[in-house]
Image (cartoon, rainbow, N blue to C red; front, side, top):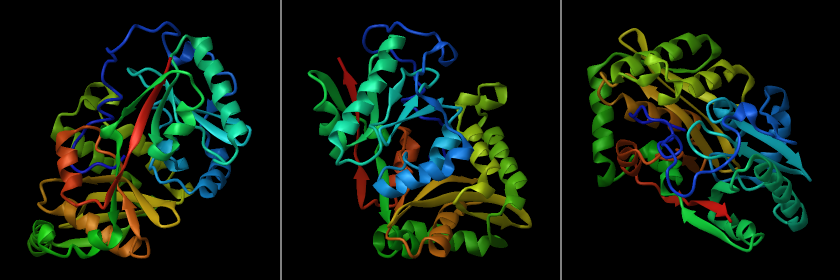
Length: 334
């Protein structure tokens, strides 16, 4: 989940669930029956990496780094069934859901068996079976297994995909404002760009904390679900063991912005985190452009994840003129 100036976490996912009948089942994840589903562990990284490399995913959700950073906040658990990874989420305020099984799309029997075992866990807990973040080309694979289900477009979680060259070159009239922001930043401040290393972690943690103070974020009052600081900390603390790249910007002798991303598939990079001190005008535009130029110039596309339904974040992502939005759907089974 990349962040361009808001402090909101999964807007729809963290709203109180009010539509439809109240569900039975465990009061919390701690009371649930999980069957074959176990926690996301750092020790299993190579297994996840091999799987995701084989399926070459388009959606930003399907990386080990993404699962690792959100594993506690969203309570991710995973079962490996017939060569498929079944990814289960139990958020605090939204009903449990799963992703469509991830594996060899050609193995229809294996896919169906993975869905069947997943449904057994949902039934055992009294949960309605829900699939979220289902790419458009996989919707029929899921719905075809059920006699009745509801399928809804989940616009808040569409991924924004850009040409890397657009984010680097910022050519044309439509990017006039972006180029002006960068010019203003470089003229007004004494800055340095550095590749992010484990030696910068404390500075990154401080940048995030300062930003939450600036925004009066609820995380400072004990609500860790009020923002994405804890998941971002998880990614930072494991940075040296992941395949991520990052950048950090020093302004007037102090680190004031950082960003982290990695390769999503063979021709696309994904940006997970982008944090900056907004007191420095143009710093977000600058770090975005520089990170893409220095680290992702050999990549065709950059996926900057979803906007979570946050108006300011949606406006910011659209202002960079994505070449496509990756549609995702929620499927609720009867």
